[in-house]
Image 1: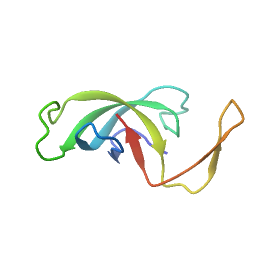
Image 2: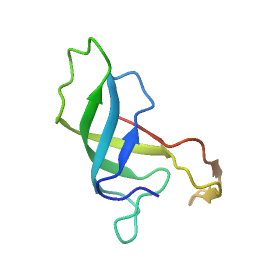
Image 3: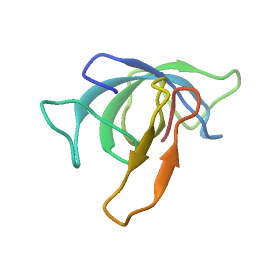
Length: 89
């Protein structure tokens, strides 16, 4: 479960290492994001030699994993198993 000010590891090759959640969008209750929800985030750490991104830049991301070890039921009746915490930018 991701909420505001959570530091998240990025799981893509955009050049960002860690982002901080600013706001949870999508299908969330009480500002808590789950797998598949969209968040607005700020870049906190970058990988070396990254020229396209800057620290503090605002971006959108999708939550792909959380630390909680349960399975998630989506509206289309598929299961999503959780993996180590991460988000795609």
